[in-house]
Length: 311
Image (cartoon, rainbow, N blue to C red; front, side, top):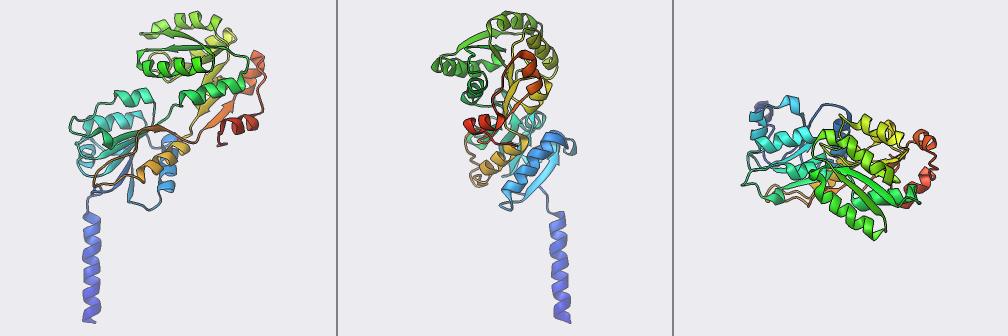
């Protein structure tokens, strides 16, 4: 009887200790979503399902943590996984100098502009980008618009590196890249009027000046008036009026993040290099295509040709 009582007492002490152990102990993976639902939750759920039970995984929303708590999380040998740009910025601004960081669902240009503590080794910061590789985007253009040779592009200086990649890849494929730079939002409309008459297709890239949620509708309406089809980078753009899009879904990005996180070790904090999601999808807007006189290829055949996944 005394032995049973002793065992129960030990168990009670253990449970009490676990209850009061800080949730940000070393070696824990912390998912930090910019918002609670939607694409952020989809990416988080896919991450946790793919990561399985390799290490403890905690899920937070940005609204649940204050600056002091984010600093505590990032002051230990944890892996912080911000999902979305708001969460990534909060982690960068409040980083305590120790935790590794793997961002999900932010564009390459946004990832490059994040400022990390000087004492944080860059090998401890990595990303799964939401945008697509240049070759993948131009392969979609060739598959959907085989007669197109003039590609329009309107961007700001933040996409300078991406433009270099498009220029090189377009030249390799014998495509002409008609480019307009903008420095302020009011320059976007004139830039479109300069590019669209000389373009067979307009490419859209995430860009805080040239193309974003605030001007998306106006940009798409302008391209429609000029009867120039758009190739975009998200499923939402296909619904909004882009004829074809190539994108990685939140679930695909979440699973890619889990594969990268599985290679993280708290002792060193090292992460694999930043990358695009291996898996991707394509989608068409057949209604807009018909209105513009575009004959779309079979979607299933196009997916097989490009190696896309049906999500």
